[in-house]
Amino acid sequence: MRTVIQRVTQASVAIDGNEYASIQQGLLILLGIEETDNFEDIEWLCGKIGRLRIFNDKAGVMNLSITENGGDILLISQFTLHASTKKGNRPSYIKAAKPEIAIPLYNEFSSQLEKELGKAVKTGIFGADMKVSLINDGPVTIIIDSRNKE
Image: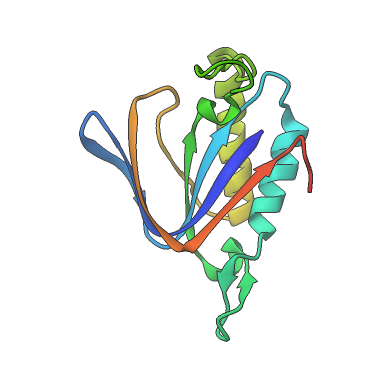
């Protein structure tokens, strides 16, 4: 699983020209799921996201997690995070999981994040043509891949 995590002051997703979900201060998470991903990837990644200290404390130091600062999460599926550009100029998405594998994992990821946060996670619709808007706070953008646990 590969994520792009952005600290935001606000984020929203629109589908068919209508706002579907929005958050104020918190995290916008783009999630790419690979064919070989499983529950262990979900558990590790959700735990890492829940404990990631990227929000400012009273001294202005990035020392607080999403659970400590009370922010919200907007989770968006994005298969293009697994694009391979090794050959030619047209990306290959061969590593991205097919919907029959990805949808249950995406739903489980959302549920696990809710357990970590102790509150609901906002989402888009898997496979929909979505328009995502955000105001990146900082900017702070972190990429985490469960295959490369740095």
